[in-house]
Image 1 (tube, rainbow, N blue to C red):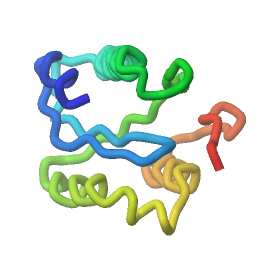
Image 2: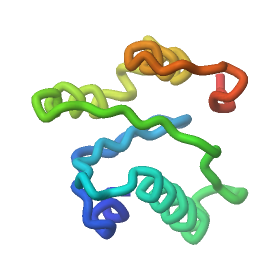
Image 3: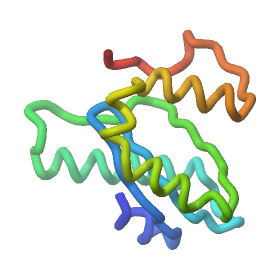
Image 4: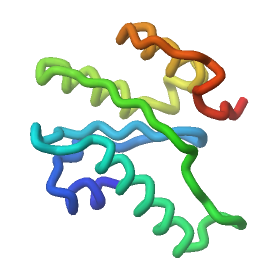
Length: 119
C-alpha cells in the first residue's frame, strides 16, 4: 500500500492493520483528492492480493472508508497508535474504535450504514 501511495505522489507515513481493517496514515498534498487516493489504494491492493492468490477466494474491500485529519504536531502519536494495532485491538474491537473516532470528530452517523462488522 505504501508503494501505491508513493506512486500517486503522496507521502506514506505508516500503513498497518489487523485481520479486519487497515490504517493508512498519509501526508496528503493539499491539491489531492482523498477519495481518489482511497479508491486507488483499495483497487490496486485488492488486485495485488488476488494476483498473488494469497486467499482461497477473491478478495475485495468493503465499500466505504473513514478519513480523519490530524495536525503535524500529532504525527508521532498517530504513528505510534497505528504501529501498535495488534496490542490495541486486544482491548478494543474495530467497531468500538471506529465509533469512538466518529464521536471524537463529531461526525453524525447511522449505524445501519456503517461497515459489515466481523466479530
